Length: 245
Image 1 (cartoon, rainbow, N blue to C red):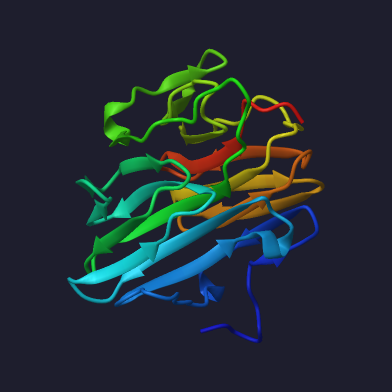
Image 2 (image 1 turned 90 degrees about the vertical axis):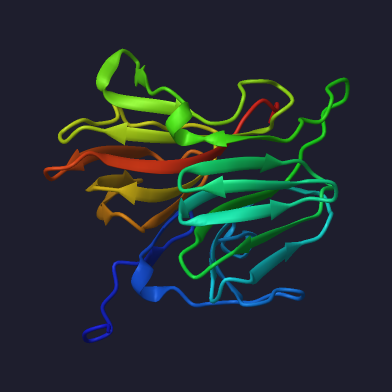
């Protein structure tokens, strides 16, 4: 319960921190016993949507029709089924899947399932085939030292391939580890804190962040992170790649 109307949530023109205390549920046509929390969307000026989906009972279903959007789904907790036209793929905690544009699918789960979904319009490129579906588990992706730092490990979930116009990665920092410099770049980010805590710099502001927080960063938003506390901190994040501006 909010005390005196206080929240850590902040929404500005070029960045946002969405804390769990302000989440408001939505439901969409065809959904059954499934709830969406639209945490990032074009309504705030973003080019992507980041949606958390939960399910009320064992038979919950979230429906996504075929259109120009592509999707990455990451299982935060529990398990789910991704129902495609000709197959069904099971994902458990830490599982992920990339679903190409013009592909309809359903997500089914139970009351222990929680997923994060990144959704964007696919940027078709002449001479390059659209990317294929791919899935796996984060535990099967080795963490690589970021710029040689073994205390900051980067897991790259999607193939590094020009067919893909988006990347989804997991960054894990040991306590005290940081991004090595303040990054300022053309890529937009949608981010979910998976575990731990720290401080995130967004433009000229510094925000305490913890597991469950969501961050949006517009292109060229200066950003930096330091992990704090006794446990490692990790976050899942999206960025747009492989397309000329």
